[in-house]
Every structure is written in C-alpha cells, then in structure tokens.
Image 1 (cartoon, helix red, strand yellow):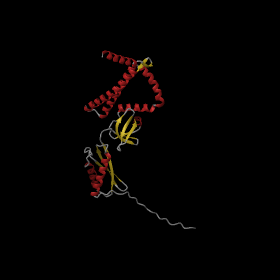
Image 2 (cartoon, helix red, strand yellow):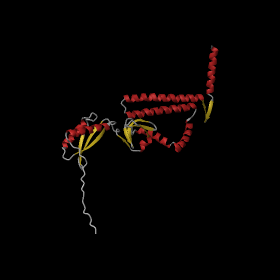
Image 3 (tube, rainbow, N blue to C red):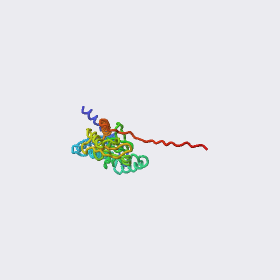
Image 4 (spheres, rainbow, N blue to C red):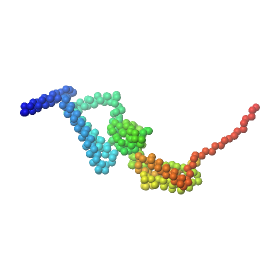
Amino acid sequence: MDSSVETLWDQIKNLWNLLGEPILNINNAKISVSSIFASVLMVVLTIQFAKHAGRALGRSLDRRGVDSGVRDSIERFFRYVVIALGILFSLDNLGISINSLAAVGAVLMVGIGFGLQNIAQNFISGIIILIERPIKVGDIIQVGSSSGKVVDIRVRSTVIQTRDDVTIIMPNSKILSEEVISDSFSGQRIRQHIRVGVAYGSDVNLVKDLLKRSAIGHSKVLAEPEPRVIFEDFGESSLNFDLRFWCFDIWDMDQTSSDIRTEIDRLFREMQVEIPFPQRDIHIKETMPRLGH
C-alpha cells in the first residue's frame, strides 16, 4: 500500500514538474502551464471577491445614509481597483514586469490610435461620469430624442429604460458631448404645467378655484408648495390660465397630468364652464365684374 502511494505521489510530482516547464519566454519571463492556470484562477477569484465585497460595501454605505449615486460610484471604483490589482498580481505571477506592460501598452496605444478610438473615448467618459456624477442610477434623463430612467452606468455605456419598457444602451461619450436634460437632478419632485383656455365672460375666480381644486385632490400632488393658478393672457378666443403644481412621482408624471386634465373637464362640465373652440371671422369681398371694351 505504501509503495502504491509513493508511486502515485511520484506521478503527481512528475506531472507538476511537467506543467511547470516553460512553454513561452517573454523578456526573460518563463511562462508555464501551471503559472497560466494559477494566474487565471487568481483573476477569477479576484473578480468574485470584488463582486461580493463591493455589494457588502454598498450595503454598509446604504445603512450609513450615503446618497445612492455616491454609493454606486464608490462601489464600482472599489470593484475596478480590486480587479486591477488582481490582474497585476496575476501578471506578476507569470513573471511579466511593469516594464513589459509599458512596452505592451505602447503597442496598444498604436492600436487605439487606429481602430479603438471610440472604445477608449467611451471608457474615459465612463470614468468621468462616475467621478463627476452628472447623472446617477435612478435619474430620469433625456439625451437627444431618447428619454427614460438610468438603470445602470457601466464603464463603456449607460443603460436607460424608457416608459415603454424599451432598453437603450447609450455610449457614455454621447452623454458627455450632448445636452442632457435631467428631471431628477435636484430631487425627486418636478413642477408640471397644465394650460387651459375658457370662453370670454367666464367667472375668472371660479375658473381659478376649479383648476386649483382639481390638482389638490390628486394623491401624487404635493401639498407644499401648494398648486397655483396663473391668469396668463387674453387670447384670441379664450382667457388663458396656467395650472402649476408639484408632483413627487417623476416617472409617472404623465399619468398624473392626465388624471388632473380629466378632473378639470369633469369640474368644468359640472359648473358649466365653457372651453371654446378657435374662432375665425371670414370676410368675403365681392368685386364688380370688369366690363369688356
């Protein structure tokens, strides 16, 4: 039994020595199958550690009341730093020094200059977004003709979900180079406007009271600041009013406005307030026929 165990142990030692034989030699760095396996295993374990440790850090920051945008940025940077250190250690295990990496980096820069400009631009833009935080996860933004909620900010791209449940994967460089409209940058509330015209001769005070009542009764309209009604102007065929109110559900603000418009229509019908149609006066001028010569 002892001899069989010794034989097995010798076979394992021979196999390990075989795997340890150099198969590549880069700048005096002898790379073997065993060193490659160990380095790959180190990278995989580092990625898993960064994932779980990042989540733990995020939960800890959340319990401390840290803003969600700051928390996400710190968590992502922590993951990237841990993964970068793991890759450096794995390369060091292979015998590849920093000087070797610098030489490889110079070659990569040439490649970036020819064909990877867009990837490099989006990568740098992603780092700037995480540091500067012009947007954060949960923001309602509009970039060009695209609008929706930011659900994830990655190194190369930002994932936006529209109200139609369509996912837009937008390059980070586009967010930095174009005008970005953020409905939630200053907080989770937004002021809405509903403009309506009533017929000349209507009771102005009654109209203002009905408009204000239609907004106050809605569950998603803030009581403070309270809704306001502005008598904007004398229109061509109507008295124009602007109902201004604050709502706290930015994502569903279109439905809130629709509910209030429905309530305005009901109140106006009940109190016989008329919303006029556009009126045009047409004058037909008759001319005398020309007499022939």
